[in-house]
Image (cartoon, rainbow, N blue to C red):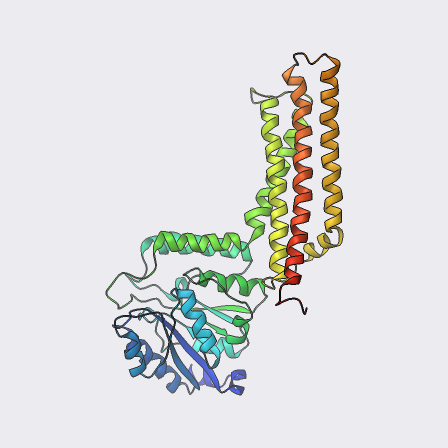
Length: 404
């Protein structure tokens, strides 16, 4: 196995260092030296020109001194957070390729050959998969193993269309240049999800290797907080995928509302012995309004992400841009607004003809509700177009983009 590993091509060799083994560290005095020793042993035994870099995130137990004594290069990161420590390490790394892993002995740094082999063969992000490699007894809480990680990984696969079985494995390798291009920004545990999501959206070559997870040796509770950090991962996945956060719910609401609206606009409807009338019509109008608003937010969110360079431009957005100018949005919004106002004026005129007397609520509301709906839809369409124009103007006027 070792001879196969050494015979592979080494595109990283052109750099001063091929590999940086990066460990974030916060009060890991009991384990950091063993991790560094294993990592240095791997570099020496496999002839890899590299370094061990520890990004200390404010340790108070002497972890930084112990790491330096064990032969690691140590940088101190004042900004707290798992993601903050790792990104500082990525910027400080001297290797073209980086393998990151926690300094708590949960991963064996002497067995990184598969990661390096995948990086040498052209992979830009190599994920460990603990579910394929094996989880030793006591290494992962049952809640994380059977619910948290599988559910979040399933959501990540669905949202970003990649076949990664373990979104949150802490042992992963990557091309330093490729990851720096992603402009990773989160500072907490959700950094793990951000790296995979942005890599997928940027079209990086992502692979995975089986990884064994061992019980950590710190003898204290981990930094991870189950519900808080689980929510932060889920929140990031939702915010970074407007299709699932806005577009799909918006389209569903709009279609349901529009069909119900058309069915109830002229008469009541009985469904399974339940009579639906103007009260249901009002809720259908609400579904249409909210649905269109969500679709509009999906388009704007994706468009802003494209402008920021965070995600590549999808084909559907190119088509929308050809027909979706600010002026077009204003014209559509104005047309809907005029139609709604005109309908409302006709209702007032009819009321005036009857001497402003009592009206039949069922008859009037079947016209008043769609009239108001058109007014709201027109207003939000025009406002959305103006908002997009303001964002574009602000973006192009910013110092970092004025030269573009």
